[in-house]
Length: 338
Image: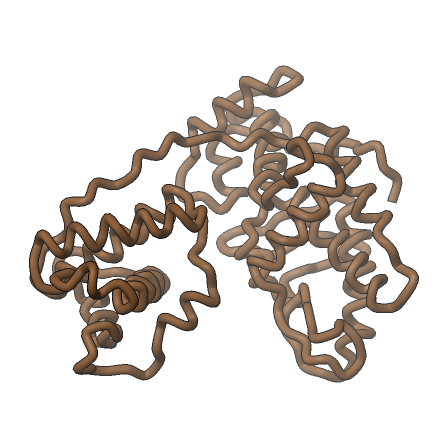
């Protein structure tokens, strides 16, 4: 899903605000109302997302209030303002998924104001199944990550971390949010076993992933020293001694993968999203495992049948399909020797 610019959200979303006489400042009671919304209470993450998007809308509305004086007072003013704001987001290059999530948030806010949801229709979304990388493309991507400069400690740290990140995404199928949330204790690398703990599942790793992750862990240990830092993947002010280290964010993971994909020339040089690496892992699973196993390993509640059908239709070799007697997944060899 496309995301609204974090800097805009931070600027638009005041903290610690309760009831305000300013109609363009989000009333904190709206977030509390979402938690007990009649018939449709929302989980904390969704409440936060809705509140941020409404705060952004109100901040935008303040700047155009002359054009939309009745935006918070009448149904006609509501619809005109919502349509104009969504057009504004589109002009910023936001996708239709951002449009629809924002529309849902604004409809909830107008419901809170007892003006009823707007009559602006949601944008139609045609689902596109992500094409996985070929074995050759995977090898090229890893080779590019390996070949990054390492002539200084800073460059070596980043190269080792980014290589481990890409290899983990390729061989675990983790979402970028799950990778960002990994703690050091979640990655088990011993002489007897190699696996990563993810929400509701364990994912066993092949030897080449073990090697890349072990190299990063050694670099990480030297970087962290005696500090008590839980996050596995780290970033910092200058990735060196004395710098403030913190957890690698989703956005940073997306940027790293996209840049490496761009250097590799993937997708005509436009780069790739982490979801492509997840789809690549799913493709390997789908070629050898039944639907329920694939869903469990991807952390899904139920199988994504359209995705699995597409992945299997484009598989280069015959797959066992959905039969439970399928063999366990193997360790396909990439044209790269770690």
